[in-house]
Amino acid sequence: MAKSKFIRFFNLHTGEDKKENVLENVVNNISFRGANLWILACAIVIASVGLNVNSTAVIIGAMLISPLMSPIVGAGFALGVYDFPLLKKSLKNLLIATFVSLLVSFLYFTLSPFKDAQSELLARTSPNIYDVLIAFFGGLVGVIAITRVEKGNPIPGVAIATALMPPLCTAGYGLAIGNLSYFAGALYLYMINCFFICLSTFIIVKYLNYPKVNFVDANREKKITRVISLIILVLIIPSVYFAYTLLEQKQYSQKVNKFIQTAFTDKGYTVVFERTNYNANPKKLELAFLIKKFSKEEVDRIKREMEDYGIKNTELVIRQDNNDLKADILNEINKKEQNLSEKDIRIKQLNAELNKYQINTPNLQENIKILFPQITSYSIGVQNKIITADSAINTISLIYIADKKLSEEEFIKLQNWMKIQFPEREVAVIANQNSDFALPRKESTK
Image 1 (spheres, rainbow, N blue to C red):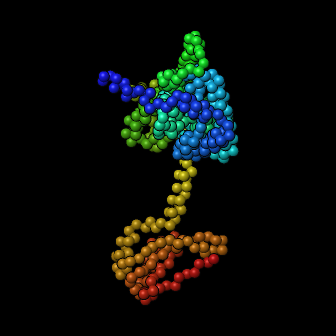
Image 2: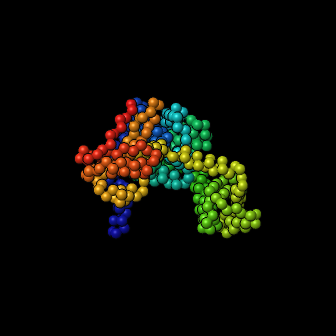
Image 3: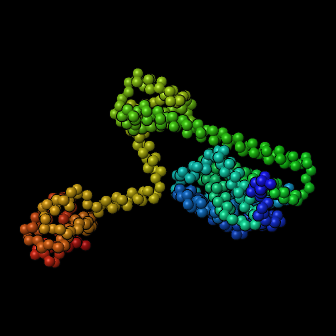
């Protein structure tokens, strides 16, 4: 009794929609004609813009409106019920959608003035086993939701998790800039997503016992199973290799960072240049220091110590007295600067503009209290004024006396003191109407 109750918790037949309704819905959404094609093209443009400007929110929006998943699910249903005409139709529409997506993204990135590879683009060029898991389990959630009477909230989440749009856009980007490795990596990720969504759909359809449309003998059914198994191996083996390579690279980077921290930074040696070539054979680690110069014996000792940190098959190069070092450091700085987003650059520009209007004289308030105790209320600001024939801008510091009357002597003393505080600015001291004395305010030259 307890066992049957436990099984009912995991029974997918509970809440299942009628099979004919589900199949009808799947078949109706397969076709890429008219509205579906326009929606796909617009979604591709939105995703391409998001990848171009490195905006995760825009990319997510494109994934939510994309209809790409429908023919993939249709193919999975067709395999599950052995409906080969439906399978042919699904694959045909998937090819049309893929071609249109590649074309639109290629045209966008060809016309776009921004060709730099942002992090969102690069993330889609090296798929690994984790992408397989995401596609498979995301597909499971998607098809389970499709077969329910109440579709619920999983569908939008599946569209985001399985991420069919970004790899296609990245493949189009690779074509636009002539980088075949980007194109191949992104297309491989797209194929992984398509196949494992299809596979998870096939598994759920078989589990829910959808009726077969065509009679298939046992031999043909085994042949289909063998073909599916072969495709799984073909797609999984490279992704496992990529995942293993990524893990090795991260572990190597952690060892290098620990080595640099312990052997140099903790001893007070400032590292001003660091470059690691993981793909070289042997691997190469280049370092340069602000002041410290190492003798040949010290360099040899450090090379031997690297093995204690698990850093093997690595050539250590310490750059000393090298004329090219300055150029390399500047190149690294320039690369980092180029990776700043437009938003960061705009923030820097606004901060620089704001600094023009800020008064950064330390202890100004304390000095005024000591030298001019009769002044208890004032404000200081910056104002721009065009004063010369060539329209140069001169900055003026202003102080407003709000409550106390000043004599002429006090007023002149205050103005002279302000000029000392701001030697690079033209100073105007303006008192309120209740003061006994106020210097005339200069008129701006238009």
